[in-house]
Length: 256
Ligand code: PGA
Image (cartoon, rainbow, N blue to C red; front, side, top):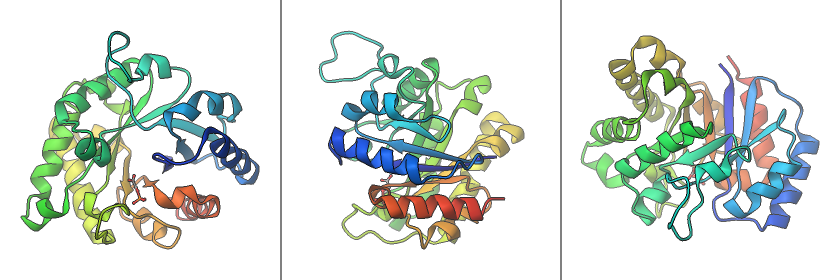
């Protein structure tokens, strides 16, 4: 299986800055066939960057989109509009859940709309610090996973990527802590077990599962060697070109 390295730029970079970054990344990045490099710029930059990008080297992801294709939904962008512009879409990121009130029901509809429009959803799930403190991690992970995949049929499951992002480990969290590879191992096992119960063993083995939360070039190798981790979702370190390239290099080196 490929290793996925996804850079989530969140609300950073003007269109011009994003374009310069992409230009430099394209110049510096060797063509690693078995590492899928994905960047997720803000919506404004997607269209111009889609004309600039070399899709053999780098793919684009949206950070969010709405599940209706068109209509009276002021301020939204649909997956239909993103069709052909991006290959992936991050869905259910904790910032969408907690700052913008997205629940599993809405996230499930977005996952379905992404697949319908031939965009691969990267479904983010993860427990908050207090849920972890109360020993609720396993319940939260199972609920978010089952909830987010509610509309995905067995035959479409191979079009989904899951990203485990413990909210307490994301760099923007007030007192962000680093997740240990053991923390990640435990939850990734639970994710695969849950998928196995829902969709069978083969589906569970084949589903790409990524990890995200304060990933940087020094800890990337540790996370990537956790069995069952197929890639990383990097936020703040992906904003620094040299760090993002270093993470991609680590992925190339530790490839199984
Ligand atoms: P971080 O963000 O790498 O800055 O912790 C990751 C994410 O929120 O996807």
